[in-house]
Image (cartoon, rainbow, N blue to C red; front, side):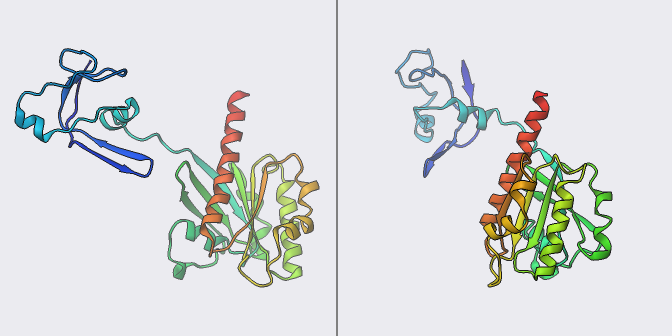
Length: 253
């Protein structure tokens, strides 16, 4: 087949990745060998002029994937979107974590009193997160905002007082057993790990009785802080994997 490309000719190798750009070249291409105007394997392409030969550089090995990516390029596939609900007590750091993931300035962070919605972009998905305020007079209304959720983010302050930790434990148990949430993937973030009084993940898991309570459910317990964004993003990547698995199961059913 004859191929015609209309972009600059360039090959750049960076690590194990290659970037290919081609000037308009018309030739027959064979996946098993060289290419020529008459289609013979192993012979060099013939150009219309010596000047054109000098200013064109044809790469001898041309992967079909690169050709499709560069010359038949269409719009990128749409990233799936998931609707999540984010809950936790006031002061657990929900708003700060979500704002940091959205690359917002920490100077503008204000504690959520009602609810707010943020679209948090990741490479393979977009998470539409509905964050609910964690004050005492608001938590009793949380369940009104659960409908339509596909996953849950629960943020707790691992360095909080015993009373606050007990309140967080009760709220998490209630969420895990709620009819609208009990079948959904949970990401449980033990925030403020950078504080001296922070409890470890093992201590949190034991105190919250997660092993017996959440047996058979999809849940992830991860430590986090604003100082370690790589770990935070990795936690959300694991949550996205759980959401994708749930999608695939629904399709199979």
